[in-house]
Length: 123
Image (cartoon, rainbow, N blue to C red; front, side, top):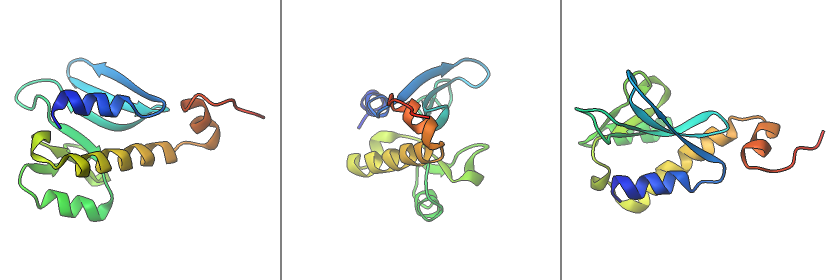
């Protein structure tokens, strides 16, 4: 999966929003209900590096692989940065992104989940 395919994959999740944050951050964020689940770096020298949240077990497993490191400032929350997404098996990468999306969605209240997914909210 290349960066364009991965961007399209992230944008396809129900309720996912995409936002470009300019300098100094320079990132392309993917969120659900205001909670981030993935982002790309947009400036050199880290252009198109991709970051997602993982489980603590997967964090250790992934950061032992070449080309994957703890995400800057977010590593303590089990976010990893993948230097080149083309180096990851497509189905494994999709599984990791989906888990990150579900983690972000699950951290929302039931009302916020319903709103993010475009469902009617009943009092």
